[in-house]
Length: 549
Image (cartoon, rainbow, N blue to C red; front, side, top):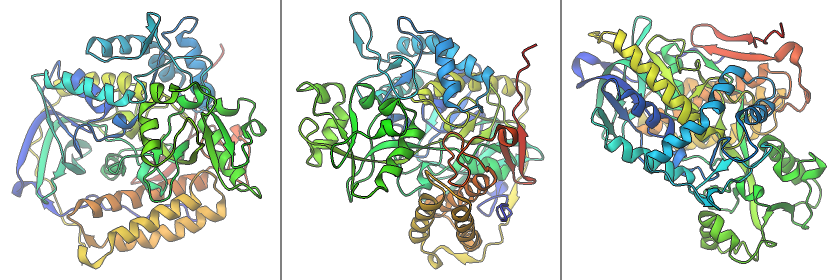
């Protein structure tokens, strides 16, 4: 099987920076979620920062995050226990140093957030902590089931009080600008088709993941992997892109966008049952509802394939009256809106794509393989999550590694000089946008990845997916796009080809990556990461294992 994606064009658009409006800033941060805002706030203490977001500030996956943020702040808990749970869930691929630093800095990060005005639910004078799958104890702080929104609003208020931080919304970063082997800025396109060249001494990609690569997803509309794809075209290395986390429970109703049902619902005692009312998760894992997400997702898919099983549901009917609405008001309101009363009715759920574990390969301070380029949050791959992300570690990652990345990028700014380069590109594309049905091709791609490169994979399916995506990319690569939809499609096609190719190379099952014909771990051959670059394709890098000596 051929697993090499088609060669990449360097830029998506024709342009000449001499003819474009030009903006300059010390640091450009791409993405306005928890990671981007944390990076921007940390960097703005030392330099000027321009943060550009694809949508309005509160329209991002962070704002949709329900469950909470994990930190060892409760009685009897400590960072070592949090680290152990994180490493166990990562199935051997997590970077021990990164994990130790992140969970060790977690309590201070929470205190910093509270000092900025964030409010978490409390009980008896302490935090009202909940427990989620993969955690050995209650360590998830929350604000009802709108924790992400509370954090985003807190960080936005702080950003509004920060003099050297400017935020601009509704700008699509189509590509990163490079001068030789250094990143010197980005191209930003507005909704009217106007392109601006933004030059910076350093750039942080914090634009989120690519959850919209799949038909079934919990992600916001704009999560199309734009920053990851742009970094790859610019020459930065990507890592672990075969690992995509699927959340086991999204509200499953025909004609309704999938709505995340936070894992904390199960942590508070909700059960998963089938249409006969039978709990079945213990057949797959003794932890049942509290098993990690990949285990629960695969168990649900397997159970749905059994004779007579027509649906899977969350059961909260045994809870005291009013408990669902009080603890999970967002979920309760969504259910009521669609005619479901969680106090009396079973809530239909199915798995959906949730978190892109792979991304721009970077170190603990967000440095990528491309000079001048940093990455943090879901767009990055620091080694924190390994082959599977522990629940509620994503918001923590954004807080801790976002701030570290911002500080490191500001130090880079202090050493760098502004680029005066003229950058231009002729993509040589021959077709007009009207000659392609963008939405039809996008739906075809999303259906293909869901069926063939989703929760459970096999070699034949990945071969079929690769064979389908290759001509789609060839055709799409001839189109002169200027609207956002076509450019998003280009990024999704690129990442679809990389996910499929990387999954084909990993002949084992590890974390979120499950192969039917290779159901076991194979540490001898696959304890490490596939790293992709535009110039060299895929390279396998074995994990460095610490010596006991």
